[in-house]
Image (cartoon, rainbow, N blue to C red; front, side, top):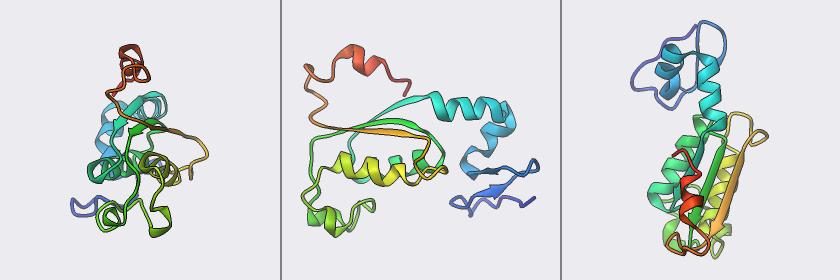
Length: 142
C-alpha cells in the first residue's frame, strides 16, 4: 500500500484493500466506506453552470474524482484567447460550444474512461427560464 503525501494530490493511490482512489476522496472513503462513496459518485446529479476558466477546472476535478452524472450549461463558444487558460480546449475546438467540448473531454477523464458516465451539454443561457426551469434546477443534488 502506498502512502499519501499532501503535495501529491493529483496522483491516484492504492489503499490497503488494493483499490485505486483519488487522494481527494480518501477521507470520504475512510469515513463512510467504499459502498457509500461509490453511491455518491454514481448517483449524485450535478449541474455545472459555465464551462470557462473555473468551470473547466471544476469539471476536470469532478471527473477525476469519479462523479458520473453531470450536466453543463454554457452559452459561449471557444475562442483562441481561451486556449491558454481553459485547458480542456485545443485549437481544433475554436468556434465550438464550450459546454459540448468540455463535457466530451472531461467524460473521457473518468476512471472508467467515459464508459460509465453521462455528461450532458446544454448550449444556452441559464437565465432562460423556458429551458432551465425551477423544477429542472431543483432536480440536481449539487
